Length: 189
Image 1 (cartoon, rainbow, N blue to C red):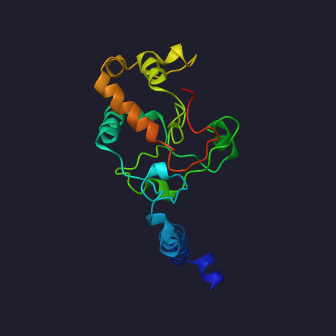
Image 2: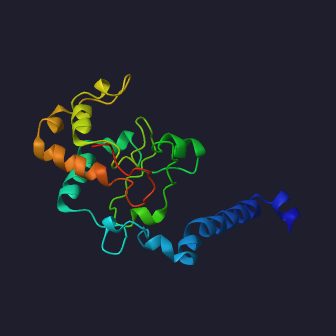
């Protein structure tokens, strides 16, 4: 059988395609069928996240903020997923505690998903609760006032519109809150 693959290009191509599709099935179709938790929200110990400690759906204000996030193209430069790399978990952690990696159950209610693939700006998967509204207002007005060397463009129309700013901050504050992982949960008030 192996000799056939050596002498027949059609046989080699067919065998390669069969193996490719088997690999695809084993890595993309089978895991969610075996592990049913992927289709359910993360079970969290923090009752503030919902009536039973589960990830909750976004409120109307948070959905409006998400729409602004999409409209302004924030997701082109910012990802929303902590990868399994140790450097990611440390970089996006909080007060010396490494951020947990992102898991599928955190994104159950997202539509469309905005994982992103380009990290021009920092990952925002665990940004919720790190900064207060004033910090976000200053950051949208001129990011370089807070982050030296930032290449993020200014968004003064968000910073100067109280309703848009409130909605955008409300959405950003939800990111990464599905898991109760921070030592002193939120920013110092």
